[in-house]
Amino acid sequence: MKIFSGRSNQDLAGAICESIGVPLGKSGVRDFPNGETFAKIEENVRGEDVFVVQSTSPPVNQNLMELFIMIDALRRASANRITAVIPYYGYARQDRKDQPRVPISAKLVANLLVAAGCSRVLTMDLHAQQIQGFFDIPVDHLFAAPVMYDYLKKKDLGDLAVVSPDVGGIKMAHGFSQMLHADLAIVAKRRMSDTEVETVSVIGNVNGKTVLLVDDLTETAGTLVEAAKVLRRRRAKRIIACVSHAVLNETGIRRLRKSNIDELITTDSVPGSEFKGVNVTTLSVAKLLGQAIQRIHTNSSVTSLFEFEGVRIG
Image (cartoon, rainbow, N blue to C red; front, side, top):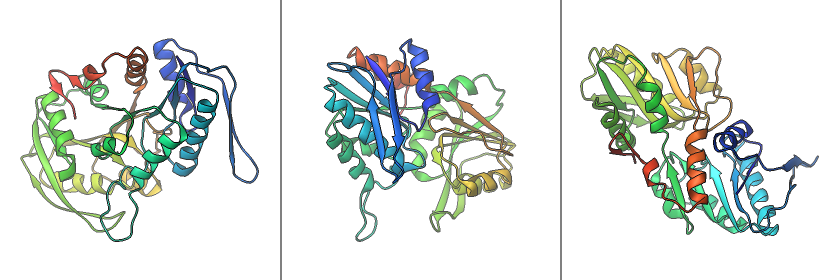
Protein backbone atom coordinates (compact mmCIF):
# COMPACT_ATOMS: atom_id res chain seq x y z
CA MET A 1 0.00 0.00 0.00
CA LYS A 2 1.22 3.48 -0.88
CA ILE A 3 -0.34 6.85 -0.09
CA PHE A 4 0.31 10.00 -2.10
CA SER A 5 -0.95 13.55 -1.69
CA GLY A 6 -1.78 16.44 -3.94
CA ARG A 7 -1.18 19.99 -2.74
CA SER A 8 -4.70 20.77 -1.49
CA ASN A 9 -4.37 19.31 2.03
CA GLN A 10 -0.89 17.93 2.66
CA ASP A 11 -1.21 18.31 6.44
CA LEU A 12 -4.20 15.95 6.49
CA ALA A 13 -2.42 13.47 4.21
CA GLY A 14 0.58 13.46 6.54
CA ALA A 15 -1.66 12.92 9.57
CA ILE A 16 -3.43 10.01 7.83
CA CYS A 17 -0.09 8.34 7.12
CA GLU A 18 1.06 8.90 10.70
CA SER A 19 -2.15 7.38 12.10
CA ILE A 20 -1.60 4.07 10.26
CA GLY A 21 2.20 3.98 10.25
CA VAL A 22 2.69 4.31 6.49
CA PRO A 23 5.15 6.84 5.01
CA LEU A 24 3.78 9.42 2.60
CA GLY A 25 4.75 8.54 -0.96
CA LYS A 26 7.21 10.69 -2.85
CA SER A 27 5.74 12.75 -5.64
CA GLY A 28 6.24 16.16 -7.15
CA VAL A 29 3.57 18.54 -8.39
CA ARG A 30 4.32 21.94 -9.87
CA ASP A 31 2.82 24.54 -12.18
CA PHE A 32 4.35 25.69 -15.43
CA PRO A 33 4.51 29.45 -16.09
CA ASN A 34 1.49 29.15 -18.40
CA GLY A 35 -0.63 27.67 -15.58
CA GLU A 36 -0.50 24.01 -16.64
CA THR A 37 0.05 21.42 -13.89
CA PHE A 38 2.78 18.79 -13.97
CA ALA A 39 2.95 15.76 -11.67
CA LYS A 40 5.59 13.06 -11.27
CA ILE A 41 5.45 9.96 -9.07
CA GLU A 42 8.96 9.65 -7.70
CA GLU A 43 8.92 6.00 -6.60
CA ASN A 44 7.94 2.65 -8.05
CA VAL A 45 4.19 1.87 -7.83
CA ARG A 46 3.97 -1.08 -10.24
CA GLY A 47 1.37 -3.54 -8.94
CA GLU A 48 0.74 -1.44 -5.80
CA ASP A 49 -2.53 -0.55 -4.07
CA VAL A 50 -2.36 3.25 -4.23
CA PHE A 51 -4.34 6.00 -2.45
CA VAL A 52 -4.29 9.66 -3.51
CA VAL A 53 -5.42 12.21 -0.90
CA GLN A 54 -6.81 15.40 -2.41
CA SER A 55 -9.66 17.61 -1.19
CA THR A 56 -11.37 19.53 -3.98
CA SER A 57 -11.64 22.70 -1.92
CA PRO A 58 -10.88 26.16 -3.39
CA PRO A 59 -9.24 26.58 -5.82
CA VAL A 60 -11.60 23.78 -6.86
CA ASN A 61 -10.76 23.50 -10.54
CA GLN A 62 -6.99 23.54 -9.94
CA ASN A 63 -7.23 20.87 -7.24
CA LEU A 64 -9.47 18.69 -9.38
CA MET A 65 -7.15 18.91 -12.38
CA GLU A 66 -4.19 18.09 -10.13
CA LEU A 67 -6.03 14.99 -8.91
CA PHE A 68 -6.83 13.85 -12.46
CA ILE A 69 -3.21 14.29 -13.51
CA MET A 70 -1.85 12.38 -10.51
CA ILE A 71 -4.29 9.51 -11.12
CA ASP A 72 -3.26 9.38 -14.78
CA ALA A 73 0.44 9.31 -13.82
CA LEU A 74 -0.20 6.42 -11.40
CA ARG A 75 -2.23 4.49 -13.98
CA ARG A 76 0.53 4.85 -16.56
CA ALA A 77 3.04 3.71 -13.92
CA SER A 78 1.07 0.41 -13.67
CA ALA A 79 -0.46 0.84 -10.21
CA ASN A 80 -2.77 -2.11 -9.54
CA ARG A 81 -5.60 -0.13 -7.91
CA ILE A 82 -5.99 3.63 -7.48
CA THR A 83 -8.32 5.00 -4.81
CA ALA A 84 -9.08 8.72 -4.79
CA VAL A 85 -9.40 9.87 -1.17
CA ILE A 86 -11.50 13.05 -1.42
CA PRO A 87 -12.34 14.29 2.10
CA TYR A 88 -14.35 17.17 0.60
CA TYR A 89 -16.01 16.51 -2.77
CA GLY A 90 -16.39 19.77 -4.70
CA TYR A 91 -19.26 20.42 -7.13
CA ALA A 92 -21.50 18.25 -4.91
CA ARG A 93 -24.23 20.91 -4.84
CA GLN A 94 -24.58 20.72 -8.62
CA ASP A 95 -26.19 17.28 -8.40
CA ARG A 96 -29.36 17.75 -10.47
CA LYS A 97 -30.83 19.71 -13.34
CA ASP A 98 -33.03 22.20 -11.50
CA GLN A 99 -33.46 24.65 -14.38
CA PRO A 100 -33.22 24.53 -18.18
CA ARG A 101 -29.88 24.20 -19.96
CA VAL A 102 -27.65 23.62 -16.91
CA PRO A 103 -25.09 20.85 -16.30
CA ILE A 104 -25.02 18.16 -13.63
CA SER A 105 -21.44 18.94 -12.68
CA ALA A 106 -21.21 16.41 -9.83
CA LYS A 107 -21.85 13.65 -12.39
CA LEU A 108 -19.28 15.14 -14.78
CA VAL A 109 -16.62 15.10 -12.04
CA ALA A 110 -17.46 11.43 -11.37
CA ASN A 111 -17.06 10.62 -15.07
CA LEU A 112 -13.71 12.43 -15.23
CA LEU A 113 -12.36 10.57 -12.20
CA VAL A 114 -13.17 7.24 -13.82
CA ALA A 115 -11.78 8.37 -17.18
CA ALA A 116 -8.51 9.39 -15.50
CA GLY A 117 -8.09 5.85 -14.14
CA CYS A 118 -9.63 5.92 -10.66
CA SER A 119 -10.64 2.46 -9.39
CA ARG A 120 -12.42 3.51 -6.19
CA VAL A 121 -13.45 6.65 -4.28
CA LEU A 122 -13.30 7.32 -0.54
CA THR A 123 -15.08 10.49 0.53
CA MET A 124 -16.84 12.02 3.53
CA ASP A 125 -20.18 13.75 4.16
CA LEU A 126 -21.29 14.30 0.58
CA HIS A 127 -23.75 17.17 0.20
CA ALA A 128 -26.11 14.73 -1.51
CA GLN A 129 -25.66 11.02 -0.82
CA GLN A 130 -27.14 10.07 -4.20
CA ILE A 131 -23.89 11.28 -5.79
CA GLN A 132 -22.57 7.80 -4.98
CA GLY A 133 -24.86 6.57 -7.76
CA PHE A 134 -23.08 8.81 -10.29
CA PHE A 135 -20.12 6.41 -10.17
CA ASP A 136 -19.81 3.01 -11.84
CA ILE A 137 -16.95 2.18 -9.45
CA PRO A 138 -17.15 1.49 -5.68
CA VAL A 139 -17.64 4.52 -3.41
CA ASP A 140 -17.05 4.43 0.34
CA HIS A 141 -18.91 7.31 1.98
CA LEU A 142 -17.80 8.15 5.51
CA PHE A 143 -19.35 10.48 8.09
CA ALA A 144 -17.58 12.87 10.46
CA ALA A 145 -20.25 12.31 13.13
CA PRO A 146 -18.17 9.86 15.27
CA VAL A 147 -15.32 12.40 15.42
CA MET A 148 -17.78 15.15 16.37
CA TYR A 149 -19.35 12.92 19.02
CA ASP A 150 -16.02 12.20 20.71
CA TYR A 151 -15.59 15.97 21.18
CA LEU A 152 -19.19 16.80 22.11
CA LYS A 153 -19.52 14.11 24.77
CA LYS A 154 -16.77 15.85 26.79
CA LYS A 155 -18.68 19.16 26.85
CA ASP A 156 -21.36 20.13 29.35
CA LEU A 157 -24.21 20.65 26.89
CA GLY A 158 -27.06 20.52 29.40
CA ASP A 159 -30.55 20.33 27.94
CA LEU A 160 -29.75 19.78 24.26
CA ALA A 161 -31.69 20.10 21.02
CA VAL A 162 -30.17 19.10 17.68
CA VAL A 163 -31.39 21.37 14.90
CA SER A 164 -31.28 20.93 11.14
CA PRO A 165 -30.90 24.37 9.49
CA ASP A 166 -32.98 23.20 6.53
CA VAL A 167 -35.27 20.37 5.50
CA GLY A 168 -32.53 18.67 3.45
CA GLY A 169 -30.40 18.05 6.54
CA ILE A 170 -33.04 16.25 8.60
CA LYS A 171 -31.44 12.82 8.20
CA MET A 172 -28.07 14.06 9.42
CA ALA A 173 -29.64 15.92 12.36
CA HIS A 174 -31.70 12.86 13.30
CA GLY A 175 -28.52 10.76 13.48
CA PHE A 176 -26.89 13.30 15.80
CA SER A 177 -30.00 13.50 18.00
CA GLN A 178 -30.01 9.72 18.42
CA MET A 179 -26.29 9.61 19.27
CA LEU A 180 -26.59 12.42 21.80
CA HIS A 181 -30.03 11.39 23.12
CA ALA A 182 -31.31 14.88 22.37
CA ASP A 183 -34.50 16.48 21.03
CA LEU A 184 -34.78 17.24 17.32
CA ALA A 185 -35.91 20.49 15.71
CA ILE A 186 -35.95 21.84 12.15
CA VAL A 187 -35.55 25.34 10.72
CA ALA A 188 -37.60 26.00 7.59
CA LYS A 189 -35.87 28.34 5.15
CA ARG A 190 -36.34 29.91 1.75
CA ARG A 191 -33.27 30.56 -0.41
CA MET A 192 -33.42 34.00 -2.01
CA SER A 193 -30.12 33.72 -3.95
CA ASP A 194 -26.77 31.88 -3.86
CA THR A 195 -25.70 33.99 -0.86
CA GLU A 196 -28.98 35.08 0.77
CA VAL A 197 -31.32 32.90 2.85
CA GLU A 198 -34.58 33.80 4.62
CA THR A 199 -35.54 31.75 7.67
CA VAL A 200 -39.28 31.18 7.89
CA SER A 201 -40.00 29.21 11.08
CA VAL A 202 -38.78 26.65 13.63
CA ILE A 203 -40.44 23.26 14.08
CA GLY A 204 -39.69 22.00 17.59
CA ASN A 205 -38.92 23.41 21.03
CA VAL A 206 -35.57 25.17 21.68
CA ASN A 207 -36.64 27.41 24.58
CA GLY A 208 -33.88 27.47 27.23
CA LYS A 209 -31.90 24.73 25.48
CA THR A 210 -28.39 24.42 24.13
CA VAL A 211 -28.81 24.14 20.37
CA LEU A 212 -26.54 22.09 18.10
CA LEU A 213 -26.94 23.21 14.48
CA VAL A 214 -25.63 20.45 12.20
CA ASP A 215 -24.87 20.68 8.48
CA ASP A 216 -22.53 19.08 5.97
CA LEU A 217 -20.91 22.30 4.75
CA THR A 218 -20.94 26.07 4.95
CA GLU A 219 -19.48 28.58 2.54
CA THR A 220 -21.20 31.94 2.92
CA ALA A 221 -22.70 30.93 6.32
CA GLY A 222 -26.05 32.42 5.30
CA THR A 223 -28.08 29.36 6.30
CA LEU A 224 -26.34 28.96 9.68
CA VAL A 225 -26.44 32.65 10.62
CA GLU A 226 -30.11 33.12 9.70
CA ALA A 227 -31.03 29.91 11.56
CA ALA A 228 -29.11 31.16 14.62
CA LYS A 229 -31.04 34.45 14.55
CA VAL A 230 -34.44 32.81 14.69
CA LEU A 231 -33.27 30.25 17.28
CA ARG A 232 -32.07 33.06 19.54
CA ARG A 233 -35.47 34.74 19.12
CA ARG A 234 -36.99 31.43 20.22
CA ARG A 235 -34.86 31.78 23.39
CA ALA A 236 -32.18 29.20 22.71
CA LYS A 237 -29.65 29.55 25.54
CA ARG A 238 -26.51 28.63 23.59
CA ILE A 239 -25.92 27.95 19.89
CA ILE A 240 -23.18 25.64 18.60
CA ALA A 241 -22.75 24.98 14.87
CA CYS A 242 -21.33 21.61 13.84
CA VAL A 243 -20.25 21.52 10.17
CA SER A 244 -18.20 18.82 8.45
CA HIS A 245 -16.68 21.09 5.79
CA ALA A 246 -15.98 24.77 6.55
CA VAL A 247 -15.30 26.04 3.03
CA LEU A 248 -15.69 29.62 4.22
CA ASN A 249 -15.11 32.68 2.07
CA GLU A 250 -14.75 36.28 3.30
CA THR A 251 -18.53 36.79 3.31
CA GLY A 252 -19.01 33.75 5.52
CA ILE A 253 -16.27 34.75 7.96
CA ARG A 254 -17.69 38.27 8.26
CA ARG A 255 -21.18 36.93 8.93
CA LEU A 256 -19.98 34.48 11.58
CA ARG A 257 -18.11 37.23 13.45
CA LYS A 258 -21.38 39.13 13.88
CA SER A 259 -23.61 36.09 14.43
CA ASN A 260 -25.32 34.51 17.44
CA ILE A 261 -23.23 31.34 17.04
CA ASP A 262 -21.10 30.74 20.12
CA GLU A 263 -18.84 28.05 18.63
CA LEU A 264 -18.23 26.55 15.20
CA ILE A 265 -17.05 22.92 15.23
CA THR A 266 -15.60 21.62 11.97
CA THR A 267 -12.99 19.20 10.60
CA ASP A 268 -9.68 19.41 8.76
CA SER A 269 -11.24 18.04 5.54
CA VAL A 270 -10.31 21.39 4.00
CA PRO A 271 -7.20 23.39 4.96
CA GLY A 272 -7.21 26.70 6.79
CA SER A 273 -10.07 26.07 9.21
CA GLU A 274 -8.99 28.89 11.56
CA PHE A 275 -10.66 32.23 11.02
CA LYS A 276 -9.77 35.40 12.91
CA GLY A 277 -12.59 36.62 15.11
CA VAL A 278 -14.55 33.35 14.94
CA ASN A 279 -14.52 30.77 17.75
CA VAL A 280 -13.62 27.67 15.71
CA THR A 281 -12.75 24.18 16.93
CA THR A 282 -11.15 22.04 14.21
CA LEU A 283 -11.24 18.26 14.71
CA SER A 284 -9.05 15.89 12.72
CA VAL A 285 -10.59 13.15 10.56
CA ALA A 286 -7.15 11.66 9.83
CA LYS A 287 -7.68 8.61 12.05
CA LEU A 288 -11.13 7.94 10.55
CA LEU A 289 -9.81 8.14 6.99
CA GLY A 290 -6.75 6.09 7.95
CA GLN A 291 -8.95 3.29 9.32
CA ALA A 292 -10.99 3.29 6.12
CA ILE A 293 -7.85 3.16 3.96
CA GLN A 294 -6.52 0.19 5.92
CA ARG A 295 -9.81 -1.68 5.57
CA ILE A 296 -10.05 -1.00 1.86
CA HIS A 297 -6.47 -2.20 1.39
CA THR A 298 -7.17 -5.48 3.22
CA ASN A 299 -10.57 -5.87 1.53
CA SER A 300 -12.27 -5.67 4.93
CA SER A 301 -15.70 -4.20 5.62
CA VAL A 302 -15.97 -0.49 6.37
CA THR A 303 -19.58 -0.83 7.57
CA SER A 304 -18.67 -0.53 11.25
CA LEU A 305 -17.36 2.99 10.54
CA PHE A 306 -20.98 3.96 9.71
CA GLU A 307 -22.37 2.47 12.92
CA PHE A 308 -21.80 4.34 16.15
CA GLU A 309 -23.32 4.20 19.62
CA GLY A 310 -25.89 1.75 18.28
CA VAL A 311 -26.94 4.20 15.55
CA ARG A 312 -26.34 3.72 11.83
CA ILE A 313 -25.27 7.10 10.50
CA GLY A 314 -26.41 8.20 7.08
